[in-house]
Every structure is written in C-alpha cells, then in structure tokens.
Image 1 (cartoon, each protein chain N blue to C red):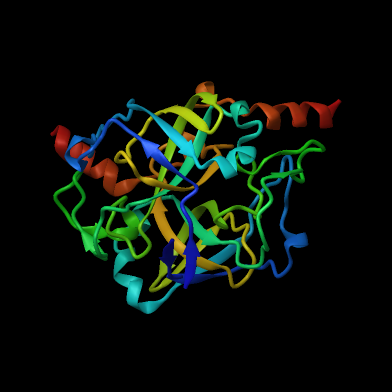
Image 2 (image 1 turned 180 degrees about the horizontal axis):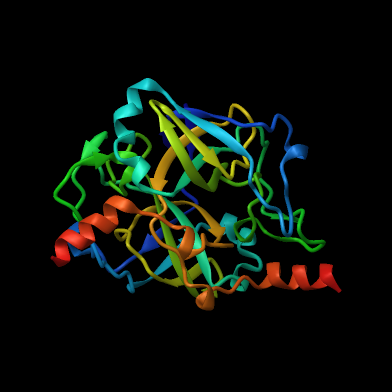
Length: 149
Length: 149
C-alpha cells in the first residue's frame, strides 16, 4: 500500500458530474484554476515554458471499482483499463490541460474536466505525442462510426 | 491522505536507473511486460483495441522530494512540476507504451522506461494528442538548441 497526499485543488466550473461533457466528440474547453498548496510553489518554477500539462488527480467522489462497465460513449461494456471510468482500482484521473498563465501558486488552465474541489496529486510537462498515423483506438472509432450511421 | 494499491508489476530489461535512456533525444524502444495481478484481469477486456496506453506507476526506488532540480537533459535547474524527476511530492510515473499483444494478465509493450519490478497503479487508453502546431515546450526546446550549437 502506498500513501499519497494532495498537492493542491482544482477550481472548476463543474459542481456535478452531469455538467461535464462526456462521450464521443466531447470537447473540454472549460477554464479553471489549479491551486497548489503554498509549500509546493517552488516546484512550479519554469512551468510557463510548457503549453500543455498533464494533471494527475483523484476521483474523490467516485465510489468503488467496476472492472467491466459501459462508458458514456458506447452501448457496449469494456474493461476499466480500456476506458476512463472513475470507478478504477486506484481512482486516479489524468487530464491534459493547456496552460494559460501562472499567478503564484495558481495555474490558469483550459481543458478542465474535473469537479470543483478535486484534489491534485501531480503536474507534469506534456512533452510529446504519438504521431496520429501510429495511433489506433479501435472500439472508440467503431462506436463513433455506429453513432454516425 | 490517500491509499493506493499496486495492480501489477513491470517486467523490464532495466535493473538500474543508469541503464534507462534519459535526456534530450532519448528514445524508448525497450520491450517489456506489464503483468497485472489476476484479480484485475477482467479490467483488461478490449484493451487490444488501443495501440498506445498510458501507464501510471510508482517510482518505488526514488527517495524524498526535490522541488527544484536539474534534469539530465539540461544544465539549468527547473521546478519538479516542469520535469519528469522521480523525486516528486507523490512519486507517480507516467509512460506512454505501445501495446504489442496481450496474453491473459500480461500486456507485452514497447516503450518501457521503468525499472524491473516497478509497481503499476493504473492503465488507461491513450485516446488523443495535442496537435503538434499547438504544442510549446520551451525550456526543453532551448536546451536542445544549446546542445546542438
């Protein structure tokens, strides 16, 4: 067992999961603020150099774990590790946010898909991406095709 | 405080951090196996649909936290949240691996940069990427330019 501590919290326009865009074609353009606890501010040095950040956070309002479930973007069940379901063995969320500006301990970001008050575990620079030509995401693509037909 | 449990372990060719390619231009082509504990196998259903996966894991052999440090790819210090340093407040690592094949509880992957025996916390599908034209990663780019000149 490993113990983690929140390093800050998310200020988001979303107070209920029903407000968060989900499923195929969901676009996350909401702006929010990642507020770090002051003792971690030094760790933000030079973060403005990056346009995009990985945010690791806690699904603190999800309960339990479901190894097989049906995501909002499909009508077929999939394994939890093939989805972004909050009901995971370790309830860690991962979001890529665009960094708009920094104000001390506060990172103003776009692309928030967390609830207001969500605990933050880590922030990392988004360094690279897999070339589109090499990317395969089959059941998502099939679900998209079914939805369009 | 939050408690996390490993869901499996990484089988990697690397037994010492000195063996892992680091710094500018590091290419991770090493193959390895992500072995999930059998009780989580159902969660892998349909994972073969994805070409790439996010792996969340624990820097279990890193000690302590350093808010400002000099990464192997630069000669200037940066905040920990602007680097991939293992000495983080919450020692969670994040890797994008290509999925080669699945064999029961075992995911054969390429792109391993973890030590052999590393505990795995979560696996998620790699769904999208930030378009290259929108991506900025300044201190990394500057360090690359300095190294070339």
